[in-house]
Length: 84
Image 1 (cartoon, rainbow, N blue to C red):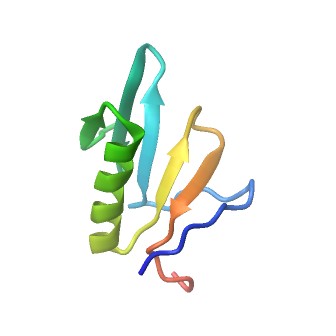
Image 2 (image 1 turned 60 degrees about the vertical axis):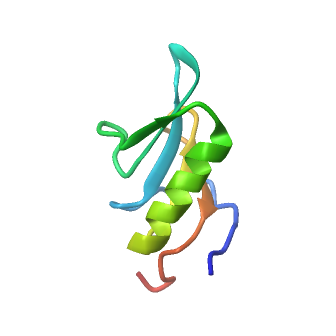
Image 3 (image 1 turned 30 degrees about the vertical axis):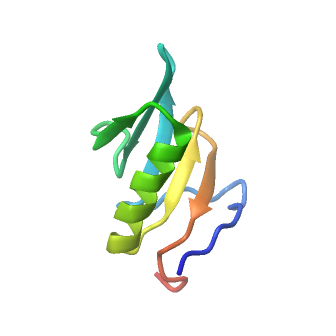
């Protein structure tokens, strides 16, 4: 079971966490993956990006984050154990 919560302003993804982020020069294109430099998938909708990230994060016990600018992050789903 996952937990949805807003992360503190200082919280950042840990290695292995999944990121959902937009491509500035391609309106409507969202990239998903554990590394901003090497995304696993491109999606046309936020819903499909979130669905893919949730499935992958659940199997890897990591969290899902969203960022618009790479500086501020919002945790969308927590699968990582609290003590990790």
